[in-house]
Length: 137
Image: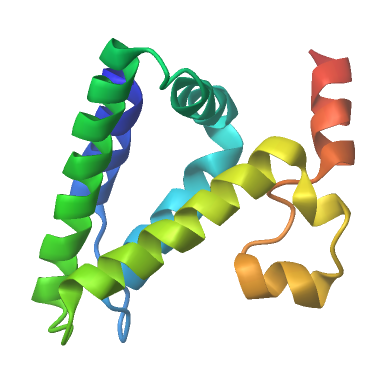
């Protein structure tokens, strides 16, 4: 988890918002663009949440989620958000939904319009695409 979270935060440090983009939008875009190459990290993260009945794992996950939350709050403040804590919570909520969708291939079940309501990037969480990649490996 140290590596997974560290990689996300390091990548976010390098993100430069495009013209008209807030920092949070840029972070979200960057995260989603990297997802296809981070499937293993994503599954490690989800496994860690599932193992949180172990006190040591729960402590580690609290630490990492707090790091991410605080980083997002800082960026929301830099964006001038009226309530940076609420902005961070909404950002993380969408991120958790995208992570879960990626893990199970939800995009394969939803219509393009439904998927666009969750994630602006298509072909991120398609079951058929992952099956083809696994067969090619």
